Amino acid sequence: MIELPSPNHAARQSAVDVLVLHYTELPLDESLKILCDGKRPNRVSAHYVLAEDGTVYRLVPEDRVAWHAGPSYWRGREALNATSIGIEIVNLHGDRHDYPDVQIAALIGLCRDIIGRHPAIEPRNVVGHSDIAPKRKDDPGLRFPWATLAASGIGLWPRPGAAPLGGDIQVALQRFGYPPAADVTTADIVASFQRRFRPAKADGMVDDETRALLAALLDQVGHEA
Image 1 (cartoon, helix red, strand yellow):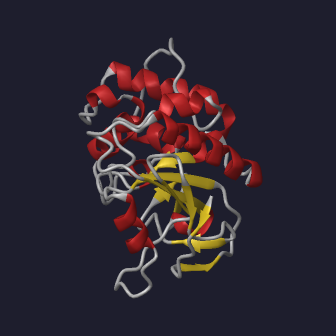
Image 2: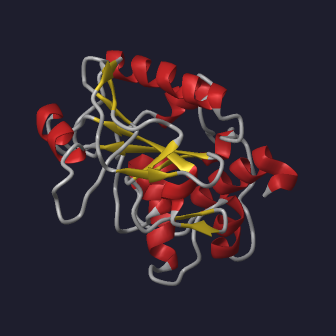
C-alpha cells in the first residue's frame, strides 16, 4: 500500500456502515492528481484508489470523512460520505472496459480488510455509486464483477429460483435500500438496480426477471428489509 495523503477530508462524527465502490473514469495519474488537489473549487477525495495492477493508494484515513459520494441515499439515509468508506477503482468506463483479474483480487483483499475493521458494513451495504445516486452516476459499471465479489463474501448476489415479487416495485426497492422516486423516476431506480444485478439488460423496465431478482435479494436480508 502506498500512502498518498489528500488534504480533502473532514472529521467523522458517525460510525462507518457503508462501503462505496467507484470507477475513476480517468487514468491513475490524473485520478490521483484530482483526488489530492486541495485547491479545486469542488474538492473531492476517496479513502483508497486501486490501480489496474492491484496497487493500493491510501489517500484518506478511514477515521476521517472523504468526499466521494456526493448527493446520495441508501436505506433511509442521505449524504453518505458521513458514514461510508469510498474506493476509487481505476477504469476509464466500467460499461466498456473489463476490470483486470489482478485488480479485482486486490479489491477483494482490500474490502475484506475494511469490513473486518468496520463490522457494521453488512453485505447489503456494499454498494456501487450508481446504487446510491441513481441516474446521476453509472459507476462501477456494467462490467464490474459483482457476482465474483459476492462469492468472496463481499456484498450480495441474487440466488436463483425466487418467484417474481408482486406489488409496488418502488416500495420493494426502498425495502432493499434504494431511494424513493423523488428527484429521479422509478424507471431510473429500476435501471440502477438492473445495472448492478442484471447488467445484460439495464433498460429500466419492470419485468418478471427484475421482480424475481429483487425477491431473491429481499429473501436474503429477511427481517432486516
